Image 1 (cartoon, rainbow over the protein chains, first blue to last red):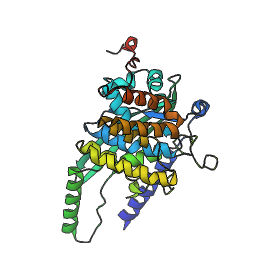
Image 2: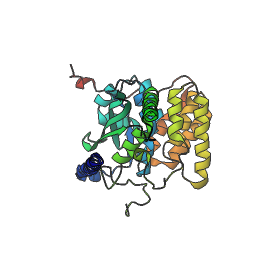
Image 3: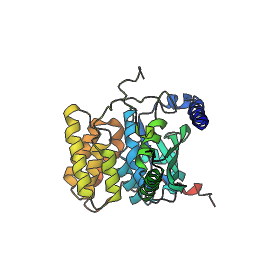
Length: 215
Length: 122
């Protein structure tokens, strides 16, 4: 009984800890730039999963467009850069922001780095982790206008049936499935949605946002 | 479980399954035709309510362009150009390229976007 109370307290405490870390950002530079368009360039991958950048790219257009900005077609941009000899994302991130922005006619450039994209198996459970850095730079000056950092973790829930052995079996199977085919996409979507939420860590609504004033 | 509950606000644009479609295309690059069909569907449905998302006409145009269907590609680059003023610089280049030749696949090469003088990294 006592152990249940302790667990509950820990859960409540950690929930509050999660909320306490939100600090308002200085958006004065971002607002002054009054952006209309955002160019998402290929993603730098620091994880060991070689597919992560491409898969991640499929999740990023929606939250930015829905925030009211023109988002350049991510697949087309990627292919054009490859044709230009810039298939290496690190090279693109080190290239001049102003020149990139000029080439595509964009107001700004969004640089994303995948820090983690992995599934770790620890004692009967697998934790899937997605960790990302986001930076928006001004296309005219190259100056940083906004940045965010997100980490999202997922563990399969192991509900208890009362039968210890059966529960153990379910946990092992869940962990094995998660490890064999971890689904990172919902985590990436969650990270993006949070990163672009405003008010919150995200950017203020852009020119196409319907509810620009009321948001 | 909470991780998967994404905000309940309704979207401004019609996306269909764009996320999944692009994801599947990257997973199986040989299924370009399928991706193309899905983009076409997003456009058809989105046009009914005037809610085609930014970039989708261009994305579809580029798939056509890669498939050497240059005339159709131009049609969709033009749609993107007309709908989104922000796209006009890029779309003009793409339309020019598609018109110019059946061999050149890149945007104009006259701009070097990597700064050589900035290569001070070890």
